[in-house]
Each structure stands twice: as C-alpha cells, then as structure tokens.
Image (cartoon, rainbow, N blue to C red; front, side, top):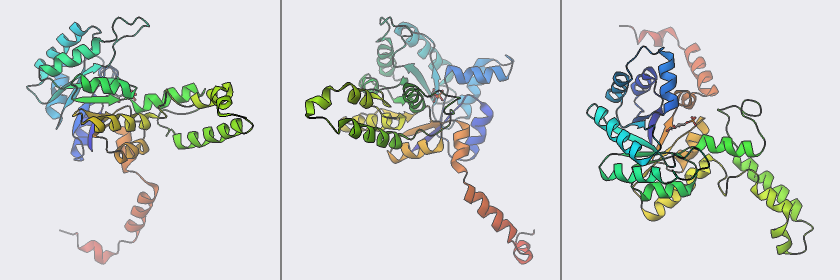
Length: 300
Ligand code: E4P
C-alpha cells in the first residue's frame, strides 16, 4: 500500500518524508487555506506549491476550482503546466461539481476527467461518496479515485441523529460491526410476530430499521472502499483507489486489509499509527534496565 500525506503544510510533508514512508501528497482547497492562513498571506502561492512538488517523492494532487468542464480542463492544464516540471502532479477533479439541486453541472466532472486523461494528465477524482461514482470515474479514464471514508461515516452517524463535536469527535472510530449487530437484533424483534414474508417486506418498521445507519447500501466509509475495490477488480480497471478522508489509524488498518492501492493520511493519523501504550511502557522498562556495562558499549 502506498501512503500519501494529506496536507498542504510543507513542514509536515518534509517531516513525514524523513520517516521514509511517504509516496505522495494530496491537497485540497481547505488544506491550502489552512496553510495560507498560517502564513498570513506572506507567501507566493506559486512558489509554495513548487516547493511542495519539488519536495514530494511522488504525485502531488492539486485541485481545480471551476465547475464547468471548460474551466476545469483549462485549470487542470494550467496546474499541470506550472508545476509538472518540478515533480509529479495529479489534477483533482470533483466527480460532480454541482453545488445546488440544479443538475446542469452533473456531468461536467466526467467530461473534464476524460479530456485531461486523454491528454496524458493524471486525474485524481475527488469527492467520491458512492461505488457508482467510482465506477464512472474509472470508465472516464481516471488515474486515481478518492472515496471519502470519514465523510461517509459522518453522514451515516448524522442520519442516526448523532452530532459531530457532541456525540462523536472527528477522529473517533465508527464501529459499523456494532451497528450491524444492533440493527440485526432490532430487525429480529420487529419480525418475530409477522405471519408472512410479504408482511415483513412491506412493514414500515422493518423498512425504517433497514435504512437506519447506512447510505443506500453502503454501511461505512471502509465499506464504501471495499465495494469500489470489488468493482474495479471484477473488471480489471487500472484506476488506483486512494482511501481519503481517513480520520484514525484503525481505518487505515481496515483499508490496508482490503488491499487498497493508496491511503492519504493527515499528519496526526500517521502519528497515531506509530503509538501504543505498551510500546511506550516497554521502552520505559528497557531504558530503566540498562546496566552500566551495557552502556559502555556505546561510548566513543
Ligand atoms: C483528500 O484527497 C481529501 O481532500 C481529504 O482526505 C478530505 O479529508 P476530510 O474529509 O477529513 O476533510
């Protein structure tokens, strides 16, 4: 599994690269905003991004800000032209740039993905929330598809009536196994007195229980990634899946178990991956047990 760092902070990128585990970088407008705010506007964006691209050992994903295919294609070409001589660049295109209910822009992302990919520019399709969107991204020729695991977990928890910041925190693990077991139990109770299968199938209670804690048959962010990988493998798509919007180390473990091609991880998640209470305790014990005869070995 390749690991990308999900940040626009040059210091974080440099530090993580020094650990020898980074294969690329992903940014988005919110991450760029954070990096810019921190520097109080005292930087040239172009020079800053050049530095990121020069520093990264693999592709740096840079996002367009347009909503029509013409704008996105133009911006994608510009980003590629400005920065690809300094390193590898992938252009992030939203699967669907439409913001409002208005559906006129629905296919603009696909058009841009297709055109830029045909021009040999690597496209990283962003904001993927369903396996269906991922299928379309691969068909359009994307080099990478980025499903947003954490945001799907947020969405499912919101559908259950849970509020982020109150009932759960951004980095909390979403235990969908527990949720499935709870749903199963409730369903069995609801079905107990039914006289026919049809009665169960049509029951409002059963239907409302079935739809709770899922998003149209997707049960968690990790489940979203599992389903996309299954589709890509079934048809031999070359598009690589980047597990994005990853919020905690356990999600990283689960997407690694699925054999995801790439996970893009924020700095704090990387830090979390190296930590364990018993590792620190073991370290403390070993350090306490160092005898002078052993210490002498390390004297110059
Ligand atoms: C990376 O490509 C995504 O933009 C990023 O992982 C989104 O993460 P978030 O949902 O934590 O903002």
